[in-house]
Image 1: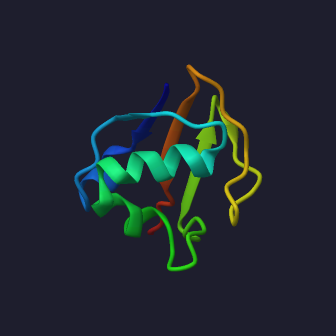
Image 2: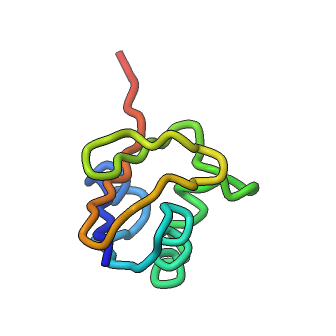
Amino acid sequence: MVRILFTANIQRHVACPEIKADGATLREVLDNAFEQNAQARSYVLDDQAALRKHMTIFIDGHTLRDRVRLSDPVTPGSVVHVFQALSGG
């Protein structure tokens, strides 16, 4: 199973504790994860099911390459971190 972790900053806006899900690609893992937590889907993905511009994802410490199809591979035991961009002054 793949572990999906959401930052505390995201959790201030939507309840999304750690989720474990199966899949061979980031898309499959996120689809399975969002079946467990549908509220997080619209916060992370846009209406075309692509990653929102203010979000980024790391898979095993590496930034994802495919922000649209989310086709980056994952393996059992992978750790996915979901981050929201922070800005301010």
